Amino acid sequence: MRTILILFLFIWLNGPGAKAQILSGTLADSNTHHPVAYATVSLLNTEGKPALGTMTDEKGKFILKLNKAGVFVLNCSFVGYQLLTRSVTLAAGETDLGTLLLIPRARQLSEVTVSGQQLALRLQPDKKVFEVGKDVLSQNGSVSDALNGIPSVAVSPQGEVSLRGNTGVTVLVNGRRSGLTQGNALEQLQADQVERIEVITSPSARYDASGSAGIINIVLKKNKKSDLTDS
Image 1 (cartoon, one colour):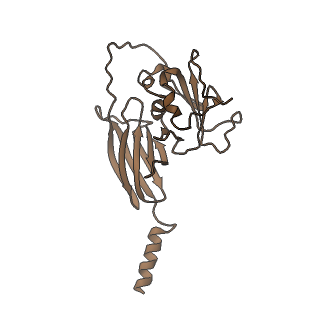
Image 2 (cartoon, helix red, strand yellow):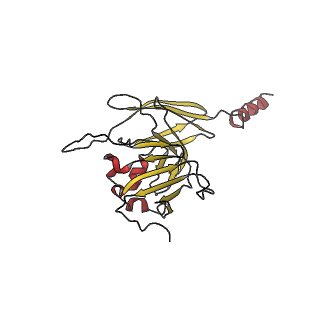
Image 3 (cartoon, helix red, strand yellow):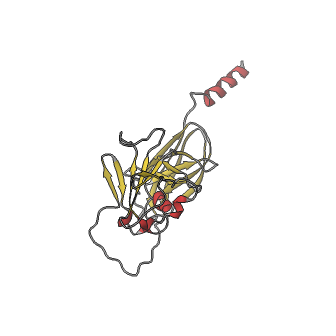
């Protein structure tokens, strides 16, 4: 009887009715300790592939739910902050990481001019528009760096783009298909050549999004040309 009881408990704890692994926490500015809203939070497996992703809410809080335990790598990113990477071990139940502090990127500027401009991130009914050309911090580095600073978007060290933790993203340049997800192509295109990046999570009928996790359209500045589009 005791053996049967132990077997029953093992199945109950590890079977279909087992509790999901829940990872939660809050992102805040390391200087002001104010919450960082709409930051990208990605969970990678030990092979560096995205396992799950989400965004922080208005209070900087995030919650990730998985169906299996194990060791993962947590990446937290937002425009103007250094990438926060942390190894986490998930077991049955909830793991609360508490408050994680994002460190602002230090920039040495000889002169600062403040003027009225569009916000770096604009929300439209069918897409999110990230104005790279209007953001000083985002123009330094490659397109890969700019993409990593966009909420819900992540680029792996191998150049694989994921949206909300899902791979299979279609990358367009000026509305046309490109080879930017092949190898280190994202590192070859500099962010200062880009006017804006459009993130489309629910493509309309005008896009051929079959099997795609979403669409990222990179719009170049008018005086820039790209040889990365398919013929």
